[in-house]
Length: 406
Image (cartoon, rainbow, N blue to C red):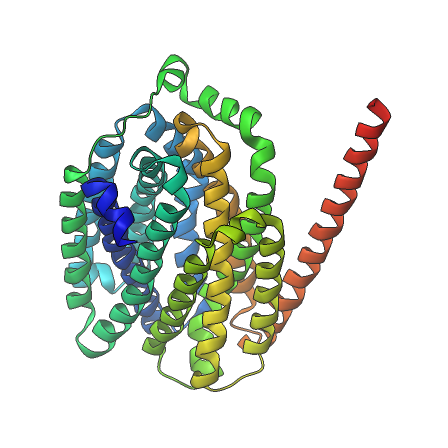
């Protein structure tokens, strides 16, 4: 890792630092808003509303934001996304904004809109900073920075909110976003040619991306959508599970998210192993199976000490799926289409996340969390088996067609 960072200079180091800082801020905000909403309403349904407000910008603007990023200077997109989010978050310093549900939901939606422009822009910048043979290792470093930021951010939000109050947590998030804005300014400019993006309109850009790379997205999209189904339910149920099943204070939800982040780091480390990339399909299947099994076992335990390692295992498997999916895009998509294809992937996975959040949120106040987790494990297992069958049948059908043509 040190050799890679040294060889590719300040650009990769700055991008890694930026992704870490933003990840800490993002997850601090996610956990803080959930704690504030739960303290205010004591309702999993309202947490569902919060998550939906965070997801709607992804579905409405995700693909369009990716096309904008491909047509615009990436540094400018990143700077404005961070600065705008900073001013939005500072509104939480006002007691009136933290004391009512509607303003909290509005802040969550606006911050998520800014993030829709940041994510594809930052992801599209990486391939311009490293050589193709170093891309898998560089991708693992970036994802590790994001996931370690997640682990730290979730823990930090829980500690600050429970021991020092919501205001200090908001101030820390604001400082992190200010640092991120400075890092964006210092980033090197992308050297990827963008002639195709400049010749046509934004929506035609998206149609072109789908027609060219739609087939390459099928497996990454399907696997990532299964992961998002699991993560969407987990995000709604985590607080309820901590309070109902583990009988712990709400702020301890940060420990669960922290364990998940640590597991993601392990998955990212594993994804940098060359043999994993060479056996992409097999590792995807192993990871998805592990997710189903670990969620089922989590539903059966009632102590924090047992739940944390199981959640970490889930994070490990999900880390593998997410990292390998992104790496697949880098390997199969042309540079001037990175942001668009990544945004399309985000939009599809965001839709799966939204469905999971809505279905879970509707019943989370009525059905025990452990029962819902069991149902989630069974649903994911059924979808995984269905996906494997469809893939096998499709492969066999294509093989027969090829034989007939020969």
